[in-house]
Length: 337
Image (cartoon, rainbow, N blue to C red):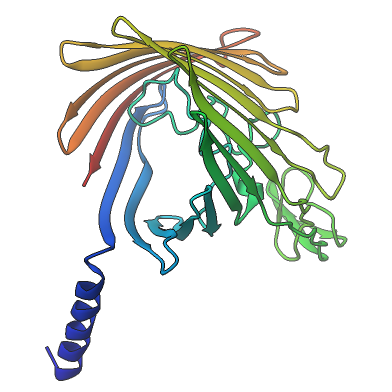
């Protein structure tokens, strides 16, 4: 090690030692992967989480607490800063979740890995898809507190301007010689791929998101709504959720409703328990949309210390015949430190 590196390392060690008496720092990581048999489509290997988390907490001179969490994932680096004011917590940073996203977990789901989407149709928005408000919120400002045993959170996203499109050309994907000129703001027709220019992008007003969670007579109840207002012709929407979890006689019962507020609503019910050292659960869901869909998922999981393993069987029944019905097997594994 050269002299400059020795001096730098010594200085860093001195700073860390000086703050060690009243601060805390931790690092951990998490990987969640799957092997999926896609109902005749072959075996696919994917992962849902590949992350390293670094957290630091301390107190300021005025006695208020401050915490910083940095997450390193395949999508990039996100940092959250939270200030504990003694009258609630104010959150800032590029990794702040919307209020709904932080509380809409599905108590009717018992999969080791595949509960993060909460609704079978997803949670990222789109036509008939439940939207937790996280993506359109951008870098939110958050306030959270707990009063009378009820935890609540409010977030305000950042306003996004609409962006006009620019003229360009597109190519017909069925005929490479068929080029089409596009006017500014136009999107390529179906079957065309844009070669140059840009499509118009619709902006949002600041997205407000509200969520609360508490316990009533032994049942854990959570509810929330995001207000998503568009600046263009898209209809505004207020996607919302309600979940109820209850444990009795060794059984974990769950109920959830995810309403996209644009024509789709998913209702979930599930029950889970422990058998022979393994966690097992069954989940049923019904999606009311243009084409109704029923789901059933059976999950069996086994924790083995630093690693956990699980198997899901997912049956999808689409109304109007059996052509779109699927049966899927998924092997899940999780490793953390």
